Length: 137
Image (cartoon, rainbow, N blue to C red):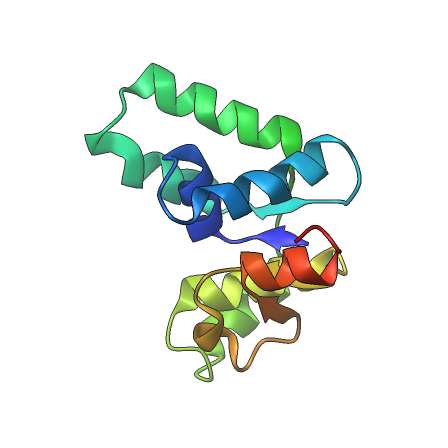
């Protein structure tokens, strides 16, 4: 599974009411019950988004923590070009999430915005749906 940026932000910021589901998913990854991935471009996105609430040192520590739990994955040059050309996605970032998930043969993209992934090759599910699928709910 590939964790979307919003799911990781839910975890890192203990955002209610989403924190518990994101925590449960990351715990399954930390305990090596499932293979978890994070798209390469989520790292600088998270770093940038948290700049107003967390200092540089804390943001770096948060990202290192995520990288100790999830494997960073990227998309090939060809996949990035394909994503740029793909007008089926409204948001390039979402298309890149799909490309990164496909590169590692992920079964799911975990996101709270599944409607943004109607055209994705990798199935998008909410954290709650994923926990139900894995029997963790």
